[in-house]
Image 1 (cartoon, one colour):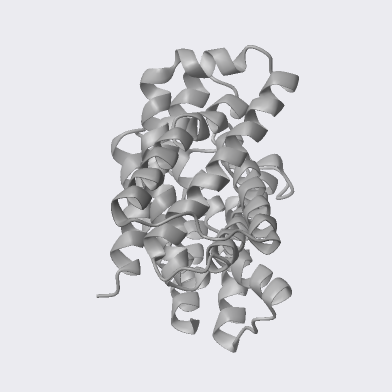
Image 2: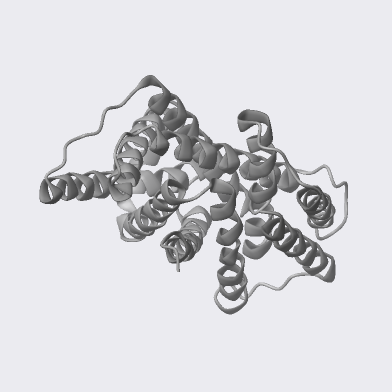
Length: 295
């Protein structure tokens, strides 16, 4: 079995745990910005310490960093911050399972972004997958009590998917710019620098726009630190997988997170979905399967 497969499954599981913890923080203690910041504040120092120790143990130094690396890293980091904020905000609009499925449009949107940015063509099966997924999103975008499909939940979900797509391509591009055969070093250095940049960006934003929120994040350290730990595990898994394999394959396999999500939604949050939502979820899962066959 290729290493990127178990690594991706672990990353998906850790990411699901992190979203569960962020949902709790958003509902009980913190703002959207604060719950988003929690993942960076407690994970960035851990990642930096780990990669520095790894370089010392293996006798390696920092690989050369060029302008293209920073361009990819900044695009990926900002995309991830905005995408995470969209998901956390979405939890206030719909239940946990539906919120994560909205986010899972990132698979289809990553393929579209790859076509535009990298010139990677789409085969007929991929086009069919996009069409099926779009219908599924339309089913999910209708509020439980009716209303227009053009609503806040739909916008947040689609935006998070697009931004996570930008993030994935940015991170893969950044890691490939590092001239080293050690994939663990490539993934670790990219993750360490990106999370540090994200932390500084979030500190600046919260200091200007949400005064007092940084103190509340620190005050919620018992849960926020767990967000940071699960974020570190999940992020390193994604970065390592992106260093080993094409982002589209990684994101396609990462849909296993849906299994973890629905188990959490049913057994932990005691949430139930409507038949319309179940139908939309089924269509999106079908689109994911078709897309996997196309890859």
